[in-house]
Image (tube, rainbow, N blue to C red; front, side, top):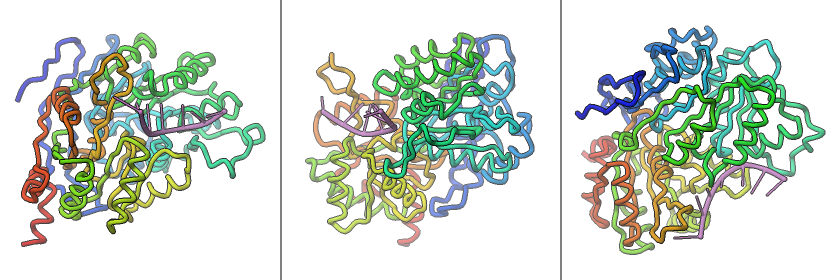
Length: 476
DNA sequence: AAAAAAT
């Protein structure tokens, strides 16, 4: 195995050989049971750079972190965690111990980043102070809700209060001026709502000790939520310059990386992963050459659905709201039970679709990139890219450019915390071909081809991905 | 040529 080149910092935490993943012990069919023997997911090659001589010892156990008994109970009893994952072991000492420096942290999809900042928030809140002391901002409604749920579960025994700041459907919303001020000690939400609440003084930020941006590269990207995020940051800085800022994501492209480093305080700590090390080895990637747009649907129903039935849940990603509707309709017309989600502002409907999927009532979910990032559903073993994500910023090039970050995040919906998974990229013209090979080059991964109409190929692929044992046993 | 939030 190649030794990761870790030279650019004296305080680099070098890769130690991980105990090999006991993935074989993971049984895909045991839907709800948390797999016992999953060990560290693949965030082995994180490079840590601390800003000065503050020595940070990575934490082998949660006990070493001086967490309250209530929080430990949350980790062991509610979350059923045993020990910190790699990113948790490295980042938690930096987050929890004085001098509480800002932190930019990159780690693989599904490696446990949420736990890092949720623990950070929960342990920095003074339970006896009834004011908002921790704030977390997320790019989508779904992610804000999910993070709030994680925080409530993990913090169940702490008595710390929380509030999820996402838009409600307008008919049952109360005018802000009339509404109550937020007293919750932790607030998690989306940028628009948080910005609004701060400006109407519904949300006070003067007592904040910790500010988190989840999916921070998107939150601070030019074509993302940069303006909102910066305004919120400045507003907080005005009253509270010592507030610790945490930026978490699985992806930071060079442009955003450069910018975010200038956004936080100079003496911040940072953890990064090389892009070639960022793909999840446990999730196998495939491409299928489809003769035309229509045959993509055939491939989905005739091969992937037929074989995929026993391999867990599936998310099909599409590029536009329109194609989400279109694909949903076609598959339903053919008698398949699928649901779809996109960002059109029917919040209640979105919540319902997600809940049904989480409860396992639906097996296949069609989604726009609203769920590309962060969505954590461990039963998802199969991701289908109905079309590949494209960047829309490069006006100066005539060539289509894949959105590498979104691609990686989509793939990361499978293979949560080291689980096995497979991705099928449906491609049908030269443009797709080029996008695909650019993605392969970018991440240094190999995407093997599955022939459009070969059941054997699909079977072999799912088998190689480790998803088909259950199926083959059923057919024995 | 898009999606996300939200005014």
